[in-house]
Image 1 (cartoon, helix red, strand yellow):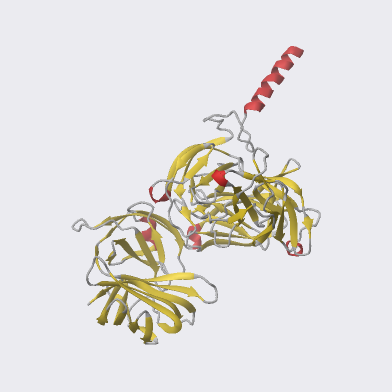
Image 2: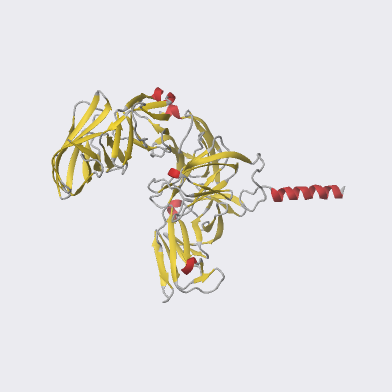
Length: 585
């Protein structure tokens, strides 16, 4: 009997040693783990930089397998993903590594848009003369310039390239760390507060990786009272790149307006209390397929972001006892759905949220050029809702398919413009008019292009800081004199909603040597047209103008006017610009 028990115990130990450990990559699981803990999922999307430019040749590492982003930054592969947690590592030359967590507990595949932050040159340090070095970027890091050793423990002398970054940066759209901020505290799973994350790295001559001889002093500005943290509950944490878990390193020194910690080695660090959490999971419905939608939970203390799957599923860890407001956003930063402030002290399921009832529209169709015209493939789409000043601008992931979700407001009528740009050739089309019901069922939209100009107004709201674009597909100028730096012109901006309803904006501008010496104060519009807006323009001493001729088209010039004060007839004030290609008469 005892022998039988020993055999059973031995089998159990073997099974335990071989099962997948979600927090440790050193596992004997192979390519096909048990389906009870993992599911085969498609992982696809686009890698972009901070400005939205698509990046090719970027490594997407999943379960120690490397996949590369292709043309236009796209990637697409399948992998078994844990129902608990997996970490994707996104790496590119001269970019900081980004980490994203995913889990296959919900329906649908993962459609992601990781954003990489460009590396800067860092700080150049030399060990020749001993001195205290203080590096400041929202946080302070202090050390002596000769406090470096090689990885074998020997002293290093010479030039050092020291990289110090505080993230998430204010300009980053997505965090570079896993957004669930999962940590281990006394063998318990917790999450961390949304506080500054500091990364450090030092490289010597011949790309030698260095370490600190003595811990460096890190100062992070934190108002403890604002966050309601107990002074005995804040710790220094180090990020474990292998599985995306934060490890507790040490206690910290608490002062009135800052926290002081000692960094023993290079790596990625933060300071935070360990927070208990609840899980908010669910699924949005009403749209056949979701693309790049982000569900964000915000409070005065933290922001937690999570991409939906393409079936609308989400699973988010939210700290308890803190009121959070939940907002679903598209990549244009439109609010598609919102939940008022709620305290999540238990696991919550939010299901059957129908976005159609929230006036959200899913556009899923193929663009087809007219069969009797031979045109270049168009790469961007402009959508305007009737009565709205702001246009929605999209670029295609591939040549002619389109899938986007956005929110309508006052009407269910939309105009669609197709635009393309190749060697300064601008193609425009007669806009298509679609109703909400058409958008939900449309499969193919046929668009006929012909040559004309394209321009737009960029408007940044003076109060909210929100930037919008108002596109003007039909543009022409009447010019008395044109040279490289001088132009006296009358700009005619035709703003169509359909072929029978077209607004015409006009302005007279005299530009000499890049300076505007005259511009009529109002760009007025004809009675027809939608949206029904007038724009008052005021140029300032700081207003600049730039003019250049097209190198390929004889009667085309490019004009760029910046730093204008603009007011619309609803008294919204903007700092704006007018730029684009114009055809001369």
